[in-house]
Amino acid sequence: MMPNPAPARVPISRSQARSSLPAGQVVVNLLCFQASWFAAVLGAANGIAWLGPLVIALNLGRHLLDAEHPSYEALLLLVAAASGAVFEFLPYESGWIDYPGHAAHVVPLWMIALWMNFATVLNVSLRSLRRRPWLLALFGAIGGPAAYWGGASLGAMEWLQPLPALAYLAMGWAMLTPLLAWLAFRLDGFAHGH
Image 1 (cartoon, rainbow, N blue to C red):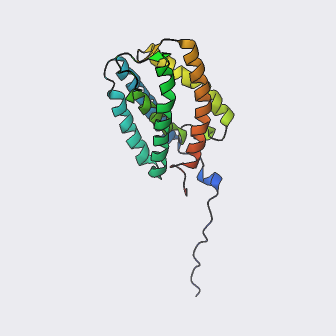
Image 2: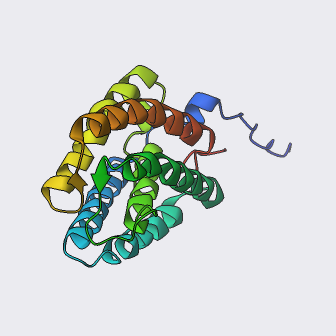
Image 3: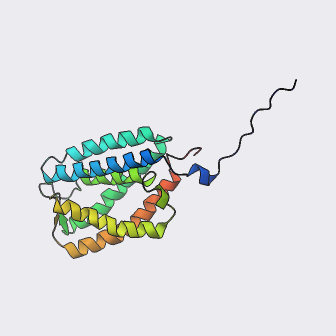
């Protein structure tokens, strides 16, 4: 009697490693992202700016626990935070926008936390868009300023010079969204066999 041969190992292709995630995971990711955004914006608008970073920290923890390779996702979150801190400095220091009740010359922590929060959707909810840079650029050019507009409408920030601020935000988000998605594709903590 011959022993059964061991099953052959089939290498995982890059496309298989980048396949879609379960719908439930995508929905939870999107809901947690939105809830965290509202916590940050409403917290800042109501003088409890610590609420947003706290809720976002919980979301980041959940996100890293869900990841198959949390170290990749953690690196992506840190790069998003650094990118956000640099990006947010110009409109704030230029006097185009203001954060009521916040100390001058420092971007609010809740704004930087929102950048980390955004990074949580790149490899989950926005996964199917990562290879479409033109669509991501359009998404960023519209969605980025719209988020700021929503934040201003809820009282978390004020437009001091709306036209240069919106132009900067639209161009910046149009460039940064595809760049962060490209990085997310390479640091995909949700890919099998990464």
